[in-house]
Image (cartoon, rainbow, N blue to C red):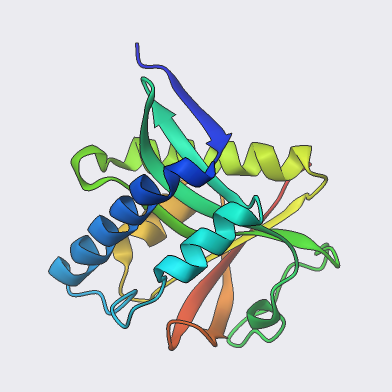
Length: 174
């Protein structure tokens, strides 16, 4: 059985995080998904995530195979939602899973779900019961991963970064 766990990224993890994100950009391109194709997320954003302590890495048998940022508080892009609405039980502050990727050689639905579940646990540990995530409307693989992780589609948001419309999802942890 494999040893899988989540840990906060360290500054010396930057190259590995950037490598995984670069591989994810290529995978999205190969699938014809116009997400992360205009430079976002760039090295500056990834470095800032690590410096601010919001980047987490998924470890598989001692090797980093996944990465994501877990933003806490709120996100301006999530304030305005169309074609739906956030849950009536939404909280003023929440956590948001951003920049999630699993290494191309380890991409499996189960590792993505493991990463998301670990991030939900971290959200709960940090005091956030309202967790949100978004993805490109053409990113069908991630949409399935998100809903299979228990999230419910809530509507459409528009991002300032990465120039686009995204499907927004939410889960309320009890």
